[in-house]
Length: 201
Length: 59
Image: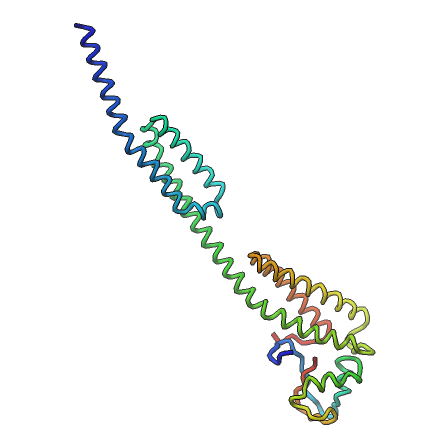
């Protein structure tokens, strides 16, 4: 009789425990699905702007899925809210970084548009003068031989650097292209000054 | 060179200027005056006839 009572008690306890576990299974599965779906929404941007943080979140999701596979549903249900909070923070941070990067790109593109109009015009004007002076029997009063040699060397450098800047911009390196283009324009201004040519723009 | 080039250089003719004097000033060589004449054929018909106030492009 006593053994029967113990047996019934044990059976009842086991049934209750199994029922409890089963009742957490669906919430745990939903929690994992929801976490994965949240990350999927911004994964591409996260890979670009916050790869290290994304890696940590992926590791946490991995642990959650292991717990689910091991039927540790209460662990999954307990850990999911905190992970969701971390994901939400990362999503906001990635959005801010993306907006920043896009604004920087827009500014660089605008400056490039201006410089890519001015620099070729500068090169054209200097080229014309250098070609004419190259035919001269003497140099003008404002230009001695040493200065003239410097002008010619600097002008060749300027043209090479402009080609580099153009290539950089064409290959998506807008920031680097603009930095180089600024240097090219500064060199052009210097050459114009050495030649006694007044920049009008 | 396009006349819209902001880096194009100009000389405003003064009394007593000649194309060869202007060429000497900018190029160091009077004999390069045809360069200036060619660049200003839209306003000059004769390289020996320039007038004060004319704005000449100096290539």
